[in-house]
Length: 252
Image 1 (cartoon, rainbow, N blue to C red):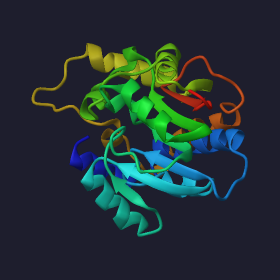
Image 2 (image 1 turned 180 degrees about the horizontal axis):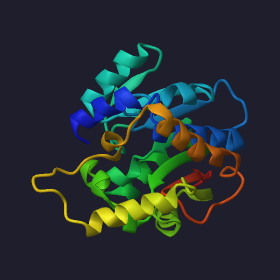
Image 3 (image 1 turned 135 degrees about the vertical axis):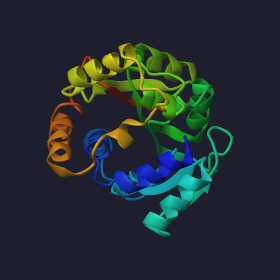
């Protein structure tokens, strides 16, 4: 991802509707699958500028791994020394030791060898440990946002299940989410693909083109976040994103 996008993320992820809504969904799923345990070791791979680390800290002791030195510098500036942070990529730079939980929020789609990355995560999990991850959904929703963020693919449940299984992980639960906003987002993205781009118009991230403040931001956050009451218990059949939980079984 480009350095200026990390700067944009650091400025917006505390108040932008998409980041806040996704965190609310993630928190609800974590509460469903993780009983209280203060000594739980959690590794957040692709921690970016650190927006999810304070949330994860409620569930255990968190370590962050991020490949971009620019993102890590922004993360340290925002969060101080409260979190151990490592620079590196999965699978080769995963910190030593075993973790009870590994999280990867919108990370896997950036990696050419996704199954190899998942095998690295599998090796870092303690027996019975959990992987909780999110990815963007449905190839037909591909947009300038995916191009700017250097995505390799968007996912379906079948594709993600196949990659998890191939890496020796056992899929336990999954659901699409951001489903209420799926229809208007799908229409906008399909229109963007059909209509000609303005001359000399460079591809832009959705975060860059969406206002992160004001009434519209509040309404979109409320609509998105409402799914937190449903997603942890029901597997929704469609959505802009996909969330999944998988486990590392002993002996695999």
